Every structure is written in structure tokens, then in C-alpha cells.
Image (tube, rainbow, N blue to C red; front, top):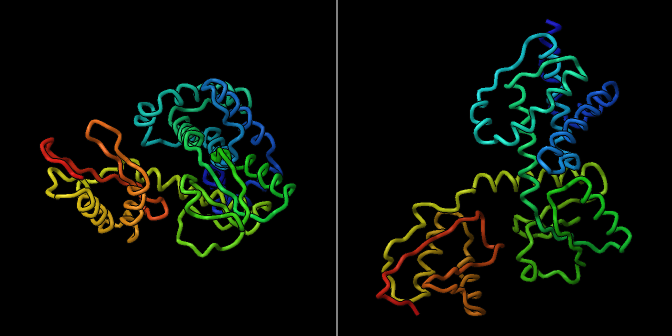
Length: 309
């Protein structure tokens, strides 16, 4: 029974911060092992994994029961191993280098199935680095305080690329449509899904709140990797004007729930301000991101003999 408990997940695993605190109290060897592992795999893949706090914490929590499983001869099967080896072959090959670390540090031989689990954590970290977000910090802080916020975000949230600070007096939504994330210490009384309300970004709860918001954004991005839906593809749409065409398409998107009621208005406003024609009979009309619930694409085809003004 003792062995089974040791090989199971750490007690209180849902409280990640508490779990990590307990591990650091008596198992600095494991923390150092994860640091070395991320450095070794990162060097092979030529990508920095050591600055990703999330992957480090996740691996610390995962590897503790893994080490006990290997030590007591109860390795865990991985039903996804064939998929992992095929889909993430480069990361899988790179991750095999840590077998040397396991033998050196714990005198254990890691199995292919257990390597597969580690690959998933590292692949997730690599994906986070690919999805760089441009963020806007909505604040009235002085320059010193703003710099402190900037350094803290840079340290703990590597997915954020460009980071711009804007005073509450200068902020207008329409001026910042191109930003992926808006961080505010106060409720902005808006339905804009980009807004993350973080009362104090400098404390632990602030960073956790920001991380949770980004995790939700990442999950949404994965769910919407395919931007096309059959019901948003119109073959030989029978309309007479561009306005009628866009109205039909926007209405279909609204009916599906991927845009808000005012989306059509923002599309037409942009059409009035500038052309969205890119040549070869192709146009890419689009509206404000603030009127979008999910990133989707509607497509309409017309015969070359027809023409929409």
C-alpha cells in the first residue's frame, strides 16, 4: 500500500502552489533535475525552455510520482505513445537524451511510455512560445511602477511579446484593435474578451490570474484551429450588391454565434474607410475584433461573369 501511495499523484495535487512549496522544502534534487532536463532538451531543439515557469512547475509535479513508479517497477502505460512519436517526433527524439540524466541522478531507466508524457509537457511549452501575444497594460502607474510590472510579466509570462502601457485617459478601444490582450487593474465594464482584470499584477495571485486567462485563450485557439465551417461557405451566392453579400454572410455568422450583433456595422465601417480588395477578384472584408466571439471565416464564391459593386 505504501508503494502504491508513493507511485500515485502527490496528495493535494489540485493545489499546485502548495504542492510545489512542499516539494521545494525537501526535494531540491528534483527541482535541480528538472532545470537540467529542460536545459538539455532545449539545447537539442535550439529553443529556450528554462524560462517557461509553467512547464517547469508541471514537470516537477509530474515527475515525483514518475520516479517512484520507475523505482518500484510500476511504470505507467501511455495510450498516446504512437501518436506522440509520430506527431511530435523531433521533441520525442530530443527528450530521449534525458535517459542519461535519469540513470545519473536516480539510477533508473526511463521507459518509452514515460518519455511520452514528458514530451507532451515540452511540446506545450514550445507551442506557447509560438503563440506570442501583443499585450496592452491599462494603467495610471508612474514610470517606475510600470517598469516593475513589465519585468514581472516578462519573467513569468513568456508568451507575451510586445508589451505597451497606456494611460486610462488616453485609452480608446478603436485605437487598439490589433492587440491580443488587455490587462487592467480595474473593471473596464466591457464585454471585450481580450480584457483580463488583474487587481495587482505584482503579487502571486496576479500572475496566476494572468496565466489562467492566457491558458483560456490558448485553449480557445486550439479549439478554433480550423476557422472554416460548412454553413459559412456560400457557393454561387445570388445577391446583387456587395452590401447585400456582406449582410448575408454576417447574418450567418451571427446566427452561428461567432460574431456579435454589431459585427456587420463594423464590417461596413471598415469598407467605407478603406478597400479590402487584394486583387485577382478576391476581397477580404473584416470587422472589429471586439465584435468577434470566435475566429471564423465565411467564404462566398461568384461566377466571373457577375460583378458586385
